Amino acid sequence: MSPLQRKQCLMNTVIRPELVFVRGQGAWLYDQAGLAYLDWVQGWAVNALGHSPEVVTAALARQSSTLLNASPGFYHPPLLALAEKLVAASVFDQVFFINSGAEANEGAIKLARKWGRLHKDGAYEIITFANGYHGRTLATMSATGKPGWDTYYPPQVPGFPKAGFNDLESVAALIGPSTVAIMLEPVQGEGGVIPASEAFIHGLRALCDRHGLILIFDEVQTGCGRTGELFAYQHYSVMPDIMTLGKGLGGGVPLSALLARQQYCCFEPGDQGGTFSGAPLACAVGAAVLDVIAQPAFLDNVRERGRQLHAGLERLSARHGLGEVRGQGLLLALVLPDGDAPVLVEQARAQGLLLNAPRANCLRMMPALNSTAAEIEEGLVLLDRTLAAWHLLRHPSPRRAELA
Ligand SMILES: *Cc1c(COP(=O)(O)O)cnc(C)c1O
Image 1: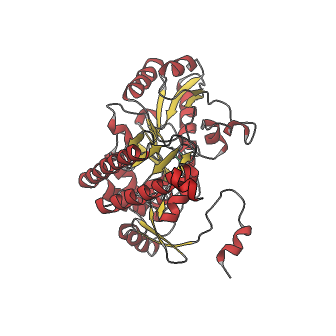
Image 2: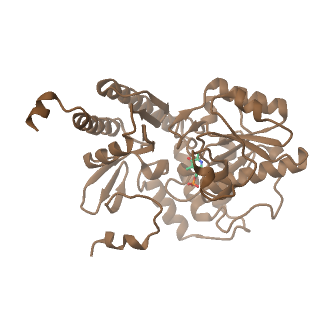
Image 3: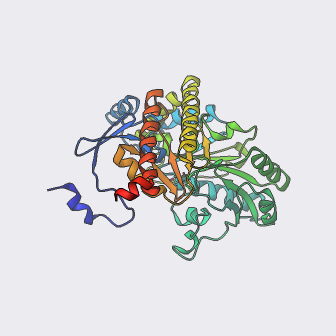
């Protein structure tokens, strides 16, 4: 029996291709028929070191036979080690671990609201952004600015007014006595890979300083080396007050973190928690991943490969008459003149390249951070082939039209 016959047992939450993936190694994912795909999705920017890297499988094996789970109420070495490493590598003083990006953001929202209750007269509003993305819990969906998301599961959680991204005036206009924080992604990922401008980030910091607000960076997608720095805030000479991490932190294993500077660390026992918070298995993997991605030579490679991919995409854009290339490091998007991105994702897959389309007019590339120059080149060749075939379909030459 084909495993796909069992698909009706799954809730209908996502459209999946009619393939079953059985194995992954490095940059490559393999389906049941044995076909190989160069993977520029990598579990949604999760597999920072590619599929099943030795570093992760060894940490899993070691930790799973040492201490799989203690209790969120007990200390253990992986918890202490990962917290210490993250604090040492960043401008933050304390960490709370949980499983997903949305949960880390829930923690950030709670921390900001608690700080507002204690220090800002009960201020609780967090300004977030049009087309921003913060997760799928009810509160993080309410913080999310995806068009239409405000009507999915009414009523929304109140307290998330939306400003325009890279529009400082629109932020200033929303600040009032109830405002406690501003939360944004340094590069809007799901919104179509849109980087915040240097001036915007500096302006937000200045607004926060002037009004006593907390600046929260959601680095669930941009953190952990993805943009060529360990954390995206390091591209700017600006310090956020709170940061969340997820996706790449666990290298494929569910793990996320909420980090804050000392003056905002106002949780007390009982305020925040979770059964799997800071569990040994996930923390041991996170520590092993962080040891690799925090190395300067590793980040050099991310920047190099990012430049290579960026330049290659610009060549393809010129050759096929497409739009701009944007993003940072190995979080890049190629803009299309129309809404054909979902079609191109399917055509690329048929060529053996896995991409994703966060919006109908752009293709997103999130290769493994340890990709080699040859792997990036191979992906560009596959994409070139895909675009050429797509182009022919859309603009048949007169001769082809005659033959038809
Ligand atoms: C993916 C993502 C999230 C949500 O993470 P989950 O692990 O899916 O809950 C939140 N914020 C940003 C910026 C993301 O890219």
